[in-house]
Amino acid sequence: MTQDTIVAIATPPGIGGVGIVRVSGSRVRKIAEAIVGRPLHPRIASVATFRDAAGDFIDEGLALFFQAPKSFTGEDVLELQGHGGPVVLDLMLHRCLELGARMARPGEFTERAFLNGKLDLARAEAVADLIESSSVLAARLAGQSLQGVFSRRIETLIEHLTRLRMLIEATLDFPDEEIDVATEQSVASGLRQLIDMTRAIMTEAHQGQMIREGLAVVIAGAPNVGKSSLLNRLSGTDAAIVTPIAGTTRDLLKLDIHVDGLPIRIVDTAGIRQTDDPVEREGVRRAREQLVTADLVLWIHDGIEDAEPMGEASLPSNCPVTRVRNKIDLAGIEPQLAETKTGTEISLSAETGAGLDLLRDHLKAVAGVGTLPGGAFMARRRHLDALNRGLQCLDVAQENLTNQTGPELVAEELLQAQRVFGEITGQVTSDDLLGRIFASFCIGK
Ligand code: GDP
Ligand code: ZN
Image (cartoon, rainbow, N blue to C red; front, side):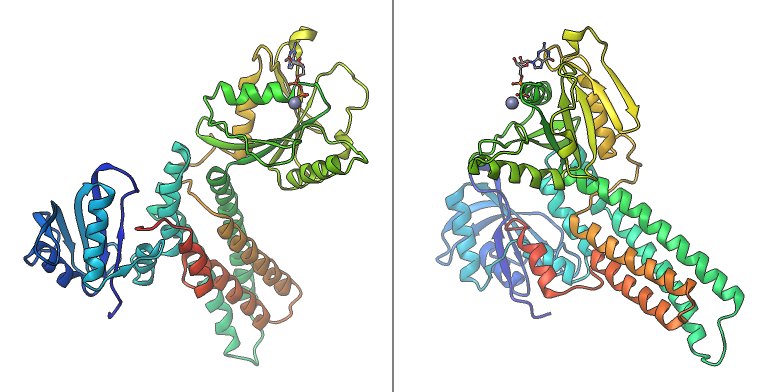
């Protein structure tokens, strides 16, 4: 292990009680001795004075040494915990650079942990997700993933896949013989089981991803039905982080809110209507773009102009719509949630707040929160994409089996699925993928 030695300030910029400089790599022992003035015992916190090249005082604090491979990165690691001031931390950083370390890239500590087999890729990503989680729920799920809940599900999937492949490949060694009926049946049922497992993981991964990135909700409907009022209601009562994003077209308003820990990204489309005005047409185009990627469209109407609800028919097909009848206070109707043939319909009043709880519960139900199993985990788009591609391979394998195209083709698809699932935990990776993942980490992690 002749890795170069990396250093970074691991605590956030600014002033704080404690500031930590972290070093990892082959020069750690030398650096520790030079700064602290004596060798350090592994895994024992020592009170120490940190000195510069001239032997002058920089700071005093705790020095922690972790000997390879028993460290976060799997290499020798030094943590110097001093005072949290930018200048003093900078002096410490420079001292380490002087002693032969180089600045760490974002995520490089975690990347080394991954490369040294301390963490699989999904768990490494969970480290970043935990740090960046925007709600308690997201933090809880990231914690589950960090503990390996998601990775174990993928590993089990890959184990099943490998066993099935071996079963098929065993028959390939006897080319003259047909697969016997018993083998064929157990391959068929094994494959069905694999497909079910994959689907189940995908459902949960999708919930995890939604909680990570937020449920994308679009509010649409005719002018004056109460879209803005509803938006204010939803964000206000949840003491939401309200962040209107500047610079978007005048027609799109974006808000990030939380409903019981579920992040929701709401876009108010402010009326989707056909028009010849070029600026407005651009607004319509952007609104449509939002509709296509939405997890849910809330179609607001006020039940008054009961004619064909303007524009609802113009929603892109296959976008999930919940109809919201607003202003029930005017009609003297009780709030309610009804399942109709065309989907869910909620009656409420943005003005009085009646029925808002029904809407909040509905949003949580759409995201699958509340029905989250104990072992729920965090997941990313990348994971879902891999699960999807793997599932496609399994589907093709099943077709091949049904059409009796020969065991080679079935085995080939299974191998492909195995590779794709392996991308999730990092059994199979490319530098490109790793670069992209770790570049989004913060420095010092
Ligand atoms: P938007 O154009 O769809 O965004 O509609 P607004 O939110 O601007 O609301 C249009 C008008 O309807 C405003 O005068 C609101 O005060 C009123 N309004 C909105 N929601 C309700 C409601 O639930 N009950 C009553 N009585 N008025 C409402
Ligand atoms: Zn409005």
